[in-house]
Length: 151
Image (cartoon, rainbow, N blue to C red; front, side):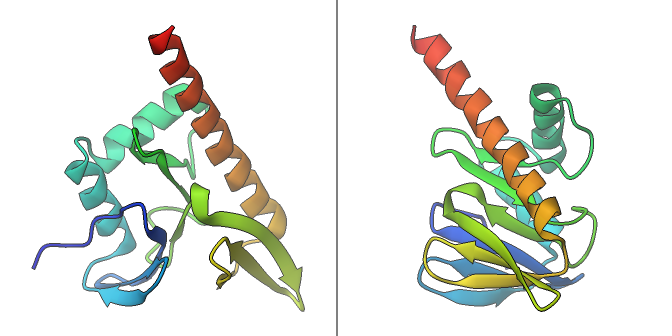
């Protein structure tokens, strides 16, 4: 069975275990039989690179070295950011374009999404806001470079 590849409808890739990941799309949710890392790596390869290639690109563009957002596909601006270490089996990857806000309630953190759903996670509000900032900066750099090429 081929693994899942993220697309424009993909909102989040939520790692559960070494062989199970929950995929949240705009209109549906389901389980795939791969780790979140494998889903992200396969998706990067599907669009012409590898996860490590995308990470190296993000390192050069942002100057950071850990928990980097990645550009899975450039023309559609499919940028995903991790909530924890990408090597963690429970890593959650969120699509920047579907992110709405983050809030903390009763010692729990929730990522609010543009389709009205929310994802509970263990990261702090500040940590998530930092990840969103990095992903937004990556998107800005990508768009500036696209504009430079046209001009």
